[in-house]
Length: 541
Image 1 (cartoon, rainbow, N blue to C red):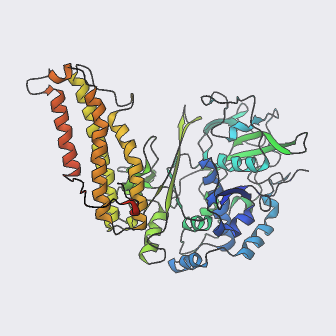
Image 2: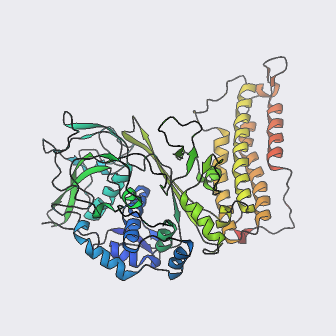
Image 3: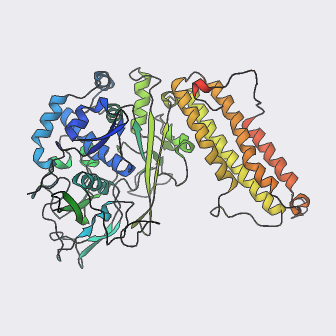
């Protein structure tokens, strides 16, 4: 009988001193202070490991902090209680066996379809070819699924529970909702409708604690992770989450891995059974890993807030208004994640240092064709100064101003491109066609803003220096983006054309309007050659 116990077998990839290594659940948690973080190329799996395994294990074994002081005590301790973690994992050892015949981890033992059909492992991998969802230049087809080791299969299994596509799923024997051998109306995994925001610390221990909420009343008595729940059956239900443990380990699919042994006596997984799972309704208000937007006029029965999703091609720093909305104000239209709000309170009380090297990981999935295929995975990570989380901080105001100024400069560059095309006798460029001037300009801003964020993390008192440096570099980049378009304008653009009696399009007018807008947005700041560059602060030069 094949076995692979996640509590004791190595399967969680972590970085230790720049070296990738795989550890068991027990080793990853007890050694969390020594690990830099996850060593995974797939951000969906990294988020799934944190939410589906590490966080709920720590909370179930140690409880959640009930006050800021208790949270700070854990932070100062610098590590988790190894004995309590080991005792908890030993108590639930049978439920952590990936290939247990009756109660396999995060699966349904004996799950099968009426025709005993299975699917390739590619259905568990967002970037793998499956059906018509074949990525460009894919080296594999659905008929040649990747063989997964038990460790790889476990990680893919967890990511599927979080992010799986919607639409039709195989009908499982024992599922009363099956019609004609299938189930329809399946939603995406619970994270598919969120713009996931994960605070990251300098170590795996810090990351776990930064993602641990303070709950005054503690966990609900009925709350439990999936491995403490009754053994799953093919039947599923539509229900609310019992609490955070239930929410983070939500079983959105019924799955069974089909292991086999190859000629080298290695255990591999090539086939799976994938069927409908529990449907979450409604999304809990205490979901910790998303920002929220207020609904102006919610329909009857509709929640007053909706999660904010990430936009393809939009760097997270451009959404600073939502990311830094930590003030608990009923009139606010956007609110940041509960964890970033909590971190702002902890810093105000002096429980975390002002120069904490915080990173913010943003992950989202763009689905297509009725959410039945994955079109894009959006992932980014950026440094975020802790000082910016304070509502009255000058760092916060600077970051909001930078995001606003960047958007205004983008609009100005896009208008310049349109004006030049009109002056040459052409039409405006459609917003969804080609790479417009403004979009290219914003891409140039991204590394500049990242350097500024890193500098303000270390020296939050240098706000004035950072603002001045930003305006100098932003002005230079704005003109660098415009110069090729101005130089490439045809001779007819100089004479231009008179569209109406009061409206003319000429290159000189377009350039003048662009120049005026840059001055309005950034002011008239010129570099001071007598002042040294801000290399030591990390601010843009």
